[in-house]
Length: 213
Length: 227
Image 1 (cartoon, rainbow over the protein chains, first blue to last red):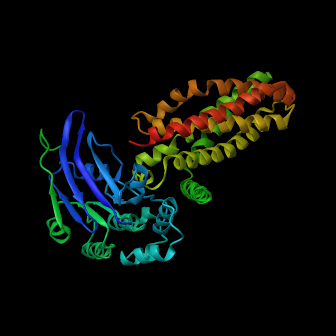
Image 2 (cartoon, rainbow over the protein chains, first blue to last red; image 1 turned 30 degrees about the vertical axis):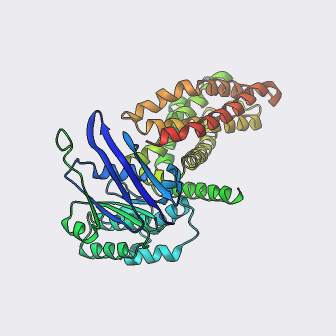
Image 3 (spheres, rainbow over the protein chains, first blue to last red; image 1 turned 120 degrees about the horizontal axis):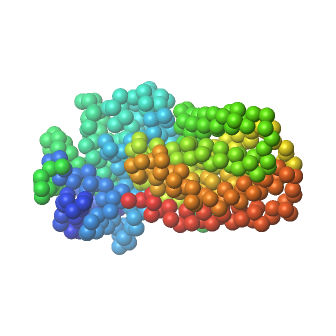
């Protein structure tokens, strides 16, 4: 599916504290955006608003497929999202987690795709072990697999290389390079290396009024 | 229509399978419910001793144990999703109504198993007269359905609050009071040996309560579940 993302005059505040305001940008198919900014500047909040997990204080987010604007439920289905703040089920194995989210997203049985993703992330040997026995880096890899599972047209990654070793970072880079050409990718990070690698477009969020959180 | 219906059912089945698998591996809810039920039943059994209780007291004791057992375990269904930060992933991947129905079916199954165990233990420890066993099973089935329906939506509300432990029984009590009074009355009739005809209005009320609470919850759940 080919989509266009339009963010217009987006603002968010918590208890009268403004996190960010007046953010506008448009992303065409194939665009990659890296969002940077100091702690408390609202990088994670912006990603949550774009995928529909949070409501903005003002402004709009539109994901449109041709001339048709998607509603919130359709936007959520189109998004792949991974964040250090969002966990998977640690009593289930990596394979069970992926199967569960594949079924929730209404994907047809896709064992080969799941195994392929886990293999690329060097998790194939561990895929039948529960997540509670994984290291933080391995859990992060499963989160990435989960976000990429349904080949989302809008991929949102919050600190994607968090807890990843060099091998994991290379696997992440490979997977992002394998994304469909028309897919939109937004990455929130402060890693200079990622900004240089993935930052086709750059959005720098400033220090919020009143200082960092 | 048929395709969307089968998609809905497969999502529901996936959610139910996930919850059962997690419960099977941790046994958190079933252990919490069972420990409470056994402790309460043994205490009641010691307190009653050799005294004979009236049918009304038997019915009230049984439903008090069922009510507090459900409060100690069913609230976890949503609290664990929020505490372990798995709720956002669920919010993104599944429609709200699938989440509600999945959790409801899971809670209902857990409560049904537990109610059967509590009933057997109650009969063994307190030995009440049992006039109409079939009616008693029917009353408990309908009562547990209403109890699960109300507890599931209230657990979703409570999961986002700070004092989750005490909030669920406090919030649930006024909502469940009509159900509990009707169920206690119908259970009394069953213990005394009455038939379905003697308690038909009560049974109709239990059915209506379940239908209303589940329908209202389905309509309101999206507001509770989403930001």
